[in-house]
Length: 618
Figure 1 (cartoon, rainbow, N blue to C red):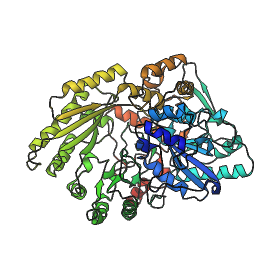
Figure 2: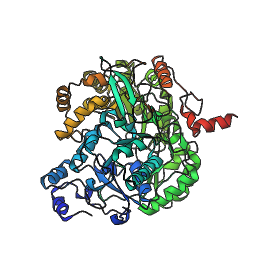
Figure 3: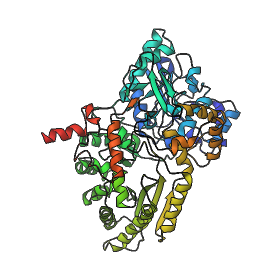
Figure 4: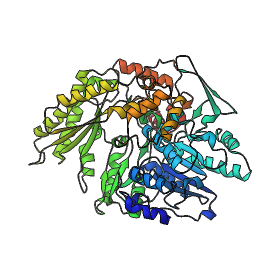
């Protein structure tokens, strides 16, 4: 538990509840009775990390194993970090109060490229050598997983091993191997060599990279028996996969302060900019009975009065109405509200609306992603304007008055007319509200239009595309502002500077490790937060390291270039992604997985929608 020295600091910081532990449902074990200690580190604040579903699942899973004690570690905010450095207090885990240097494994979930500096900073604050090569003993094994692990290269020098794909099985296999290696007196190098033979494990130190004169990759060579291709791990039967029956209940309000229930993994849609839609394929659903019983257990064990049905596209759950019927049989009586945070425009029906109007109405959120139909075809969004208007009219008739619309600017082939259509679509929603005869009387409509900047990501059809330069993105943001004429529309946009750095890291290679190390030495952290981010300082570091960031962010790749992540297999073939990129340039859409198999490669897993569809056709 938190020591006396830390207690004295808590009065000096903004939110002491972030740093004390002791929450309801947190797991305390006797460290003398466990064989292995795992520090689960989330490289952001307590409020962000405690909202993350993956951490909740793995924390409970690891602690269900008698010999493992998994504890939580979050990045201290600037005020607490300052006090810890001043008083010589190392970064510690919330459950025991022990420094992370006492742990066998130090694991990071990488959800966002701009959290890389927080990861390195947390190691530094914990007194753990930042570079993998400087950690020579069989302890403090630094591991990482999450979506950003699909291109591990920009942080390859710091991580001992990456988990590729879904972690529930592979993480435990690696920990069991560690136990065995330690009992047999094996070295860290031997442990890593053996780990590399477990499917879903990538050990960067076992691969050499050579570069061409133009800076592109010439070859990627495995050594010491490491596999040439690392295949992702996948949970096949979702009803049988581990899911916690309680969550740690936070002491301070967190970003998503509610019970969260995962209903399926993957996505049938194939939006061409969306990394998650490809790396989590194929779609695997839980049954309505399993979801219902897990929701009920969570609400009973945590006291939450809201349950969020989590997935990449909730209305694509094939049995959504029967599921909502099961849930509303008890949620209404127990005053528990249900939220569907990822609704598609074409999936919001009267039936769904009536089921989720249980206790309170929040605003509805939809993501058309592009203003014009041509652009929606380019990105394979498969949503028409009339569908969006019909959906909004349904919602307005049901009593909703607030709609949020998410868009992206800087997409391949985009013109200024396409950009102006973002504002036009927002206006069409406002007009639809006033044309809806049975809308809520005496209330005005509020439409929020949010525009983020396109970041080309690995394992998407747009992985070869350049990102717009910062001046062009600024020009497009201004064009939307100038095109909005109604006070009913609020416009938000994402800072183009952070999107630029995100693009550099998303498609970077190992040569960026030098810049990451220098950034760590200079105390960079919280790059995803405006309070701390400085593109100017990053450009200075790139300059010192002889790195041209535009090489990673703004350069179009050729289809035959070796990409930094080509040795990793997420189940979707490069040839399929190339074909989808070509279809984008012809404004051709591709039907979703339940309509027609497009041969992406994910059928090889022998599970999910690929095989449901096949059985139905027989």
